[in-house]
Image 1 (cartoon, rainbow, N blue to C red):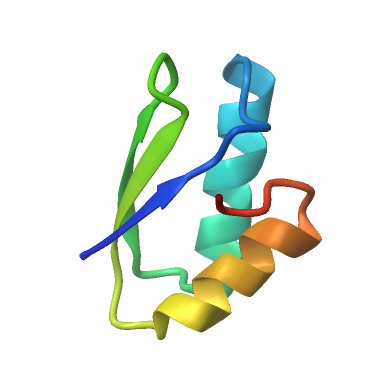
Image 2: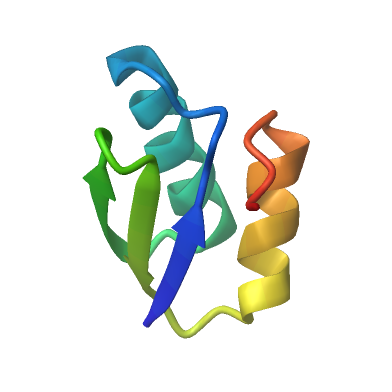
Length: 63
């Protein structure tokens, strides 16, 4: 289980992009977005660094 703080995730569109990005990095992942807290929790066998890099490349670098 990985948890990322995403300060740049501010709206529903942002959350959708984050979800798409995570599924591209690991199609089998499951995630939960907490938009008010600007946080995403990811259940994935993929390495944390790979997920963080994918999020950063999509414009949502983890804090």
